[in-house]
Image (cartoon, rainbow over all chains, first blue to last red):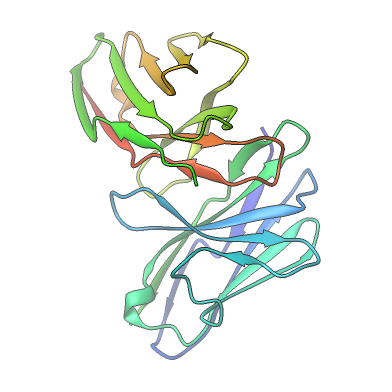
Length: 115
Length: 113
């Protein structure tokens, strides 16, 4: 299958700092990438759809000023958690659909811990 | 929007037995149904998928069935092994690429040696 790379895999930061997470499609171009948040033993909660060259589409209840998404190229999307607080601690995971067969592949996830 | 329900939430089987996980969806326009396996702290891995023009698909010990009329699809794992223990997620989507995937709530499968 296609390869989606996500970095960093783990980050610990102080409350009030910003954290950037990168998601790259390594062997295909992805016009759309998706960002999910996952709490322990729970399902994947879609946060936003990242569209190359345009603004991201956020799901209801997700603060777009809190979770900044940039999709500047066909292989890279970034999620920046601004002014992180302990309640933002979670597993964040990205995914991209591989055209033309729409199979969805996931990055390896980022475990964010805000102290 | 689409609503995907998944049952059971937890499932324990003896090694060698079969495991079945069921999902229902609400949007009749959904036409692509993948299943993902997620081990603790790792990324979900696509294990099998089915499109709406197919009723059943099999890959070794894993099979998926789809009933479009009833809007439900199921994952079947035969001859289960301890390494099958993981969380399994079903999903529904409307192809082509770029459309959202809606995930079920997950099933934690434990295979008892």
